[in-house]
Image (cartoon, rainbow, N blue to C red; front, side):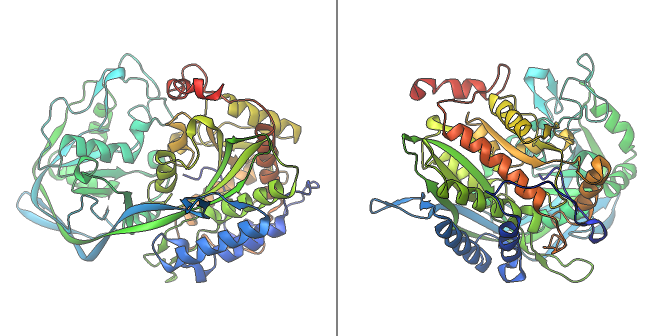
Length: 554
């Protein structure tokens, strides 16, 4: 997720800024963002005309910047792209949803009370009739924390209600009673993706995640727009091993109402779920039904790959990454707009990466190779970066680092900068050190509860051991300080994130974004012109994976 940023029209003002280094030009960034987020690109969804236009534009700009093709090998030559085979799932026709409460049927509306994802099991229809409903707390099985929310509960054929985030999000860590899940800092157990994976492992008919804005870190509009849209997955031999028949979200008020009708209190159950003693609770007299068709297709999307070959050690590679996709065309907003332009998320990241590539291509040849990876389907589950890191074009053992950029801020220059989550690595130390040379300081992730470390394209690299970080713009603005920065973030998350309102605004001040690009450029230059291999620090869950390939870096 995008954890910093940005703003209503009333506060997208131009801020005074210090002079910039010459490498990254705000005007060039603006030019790219304006094109990529225009209505002509139809929200840049994979497997659409918008993808074709986007891929063609990035290739054109890579060529103009002086990069070389770094993608798939075809007839002994590198192409500009890497093929990414994906399965595409889309709900067809009406989605009917109802619950039976003590013999009385209540109908729910797709997109309003619930947001049901197109099934990713490969089935062309989801049809569930009068399935029992069970409340399973946070839906976590964590043996290393002596935690089990299921206590042997059989979920086959049942729908589970599950809370979002971790058991100690509200209470803080309590090792004796509530376990230690990082408090406000989300662990992977708190991510909705984990909860859906657990549904498949448990053989459940489905999980409905109860939406609450604070622990989810975004409002219902984001949930609706992200989950009622087309969804994608990597091609799987057995999709049902990874996905239950039903995956979706439910509004908190509806969950409260549902529990109350069964003689249960939501807040009381939540408090119980925050302890190890919690046991699943079946909702007596309540059943769930739904029926809808699913269109299933296999498609091939594209990662776009540019390269600056290294002069001395070309087999050692620094990777910059950024996702080109957004949500495409979806449900209309209050103004009737159906195009999810994705200007901040993430046309500006692609724009900045293109300009970093231009600086590398037109500067002194780096000792190591530098790869510029524009990935597909981030919005569908980090699928482009997942595919690359599972089928790398260049060995991960000799990948020096991954520097990711996602939704940089157009709010003007900042005194600080941040990253998604807290990456316990020497790469983060390098980033902080380079930032100091720019007169900027590092601020820890301001919203660790959002689980941002697991939500950007650096994560597939990290879990395979590659030191990886996702850069974030700062909030301590040169003009207005943290109060102005926090205001940008709050308004962007509420009014623009994953909504048609995320559009290009000519009043933006992109000098801060250019400074962010310069900082990332200088970090990449440091890595590309050294013999350093960044490492995960002791205690990192990724250290052992990286250490296992240490002999290949000698």
